[in-house]
Image 1 (cartoon, each protein chain N blue to C red):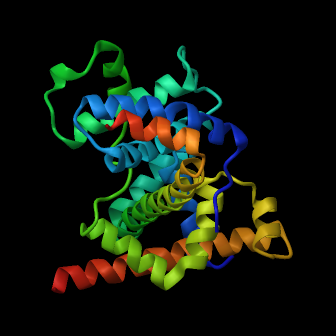
Image 2: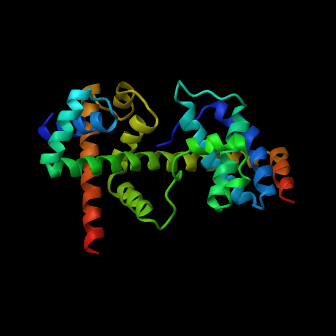
Length: 174
Length: 85
């Protein structure tokens, strides 16, 4: 199930990507690396942008480029002195990794959950990640009422908890 | 909703800090005497992390599509490729 992105995301993509490419090229990276880091930075920005309290004093493209620089530096563990003062505040705001690296236990667990309960993950993603209302979710996932969609959401969380518990158990006895 | 689903809802209120101070205090007391509840809180926190990662993974796949579309525009593709020459 696709997450909807607006035309403004498309515009931001075309405006910010060349800026990120220039920054990454200066730091010695290639096109694939620039694309990867840019997508991570854009994800961070889009998550922040849905918070009504989120405000920036620079353009969105410059902000995304700033995030990309920090993610790049963090990825290659360069020294903190290479980060400018303007970037430092932003670095403090950024959380942990955008996505778990492949072959980590978290990535394997996510793959396991996708294979055992993709429909549940899609419903939960619509509510928690895309922040859609229960009414929209009821319509999208064909539930008769908002209440039945809410009950299903809780059942899905319970199912995910149980899958994670099983996988923790498997890990513990492995 | 059956008991287990009520517990899911209560944990959600706790994890997202939507409980009043007295309810929070009571919930934390219950966790102390009920290790299963404590374990379920930890598991549910992991569920929320997994949902976020799944959302990001889906979005990243979609951005890959954006990249392919954008690079089909010869002017945009030339601009990008020239940066790495």
